[in-house]
Length: 396
Length: 230
Image 1: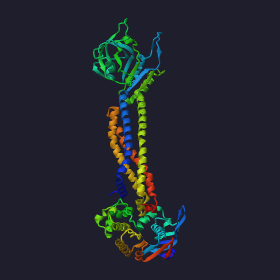
Image 2: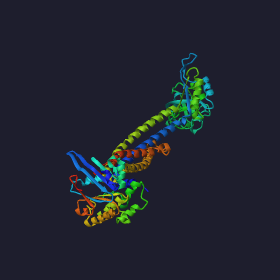
Image 3: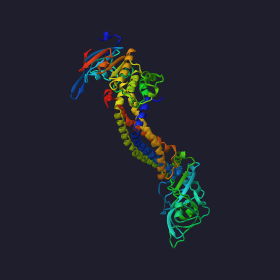
Image 4: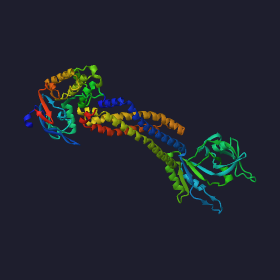
């Protein structure tokens, strides 16, 4: 059978149902604010994480110093040479090594001039980290792939021709044929931003741009992402044994910076949402003070016939607990609905909404709501239990 | 004085004074009152308004402690007890019957009677004692389900008597128990009290009605905080 003090609290809440409900609305708003903001932040974090973490298994190696050509030629090379590439290959274990040439170039499609990046890659390396959306990989010497943005901006399809180089009437420019169009990558964390780029074979690149056997960047695609630190250490030990010639970086540090920034923002907006609970706390405090004032004589009766102070306190704390639970449960349900709508509206996807790390904010919000409620009821309950029974009985 | 009281002395007031410190100055509600009530007595306390009747009731009911002097219940000095001990003594040894009934409005008649049992045993009554007490004061089972505001004054006072008796206290403290009742119902309630006295309860009744005081074995009259007619 139930505790009689709990019964008394339930009956008191029922007796003043409207007032209790209004007091609980503050808690509902607070719970919804905390839960929704938390879920929104987490969904944002997870969504950004998944966008960036597709290349998190890639170690990016770039040249750390500018080397002046030993021939005395004025051209300065900033790249990774063959011997360094061999060092990388020997130290990187079974992982995939992708040497990359790249530079900026002007080009012409039909009569339209444009500017973008041009990458030189071994055709066999392309499918290892790029997705061809239409057409096929580079087959012949003059084949090229284009990024999704450049293809759509210049109305290119498979078979379109691109003249590479600055438009100049006196020079015959090399022409490449579009063999395929790449899927959009966005801002890629492996530094290969192909959306606004043309990809040609490494041979075509060196034939026309030079830099044979000198690469701007070498990417190491790891088979097992957990070996990233070990692999980086091995490469560093080998290629940078005398001086630092290769800069080693990866997406994980950038990813963790972005994730932690988003985490901070989430906490901040949750705190703003949580401040509505302060208003709720005042409202609950007010309602409980009213409840105590209205029931002074009843408290006097309870105390005079032998009710312990702790039992009177318990009765009023049950009452705030009930208000808190009403607010928390309704707030929890509304958080689910509102949170889903807000995530859908602001992120455009609810793919991560049902994950435990997102939904956990609903019980978090509910628990905080109940705690705030009970804490607000502490003083009124203490006041009730410390009344003088004689004075309380006299109260009409 | 204590040693002469023997085992049958239930309540002793030894030179008890109660002084209230008011803004207008100190007010002495009880002025060096000494009194002994033995187990099984039926005592009426009379006096005009402001004579100290309520103050002495609050002392006897351990709702208050003397400013000076000693109050002994069952030989125990109330002033030396902790708050919790006084609460437990109130719960176990004293049954209160008030002029305004003072039933708990949110509980049914039955629950009001069950309440002191819950306080004592920390669980709902499964022994049937609460129902038995209600029947004994003439409240049937259906009536027991009603809230106090659905009962007449006489019925409420019966429920209050059942509540006062349910923990089998030695002392019944009645503060103008018939004050809010019509004459006929008032006498019915008095009959119940007389019957309880006959069964061995110590009944202390505060009244200003001489006719009611005649039911008692002994009448103590207070005036201006002093006993004038022991």
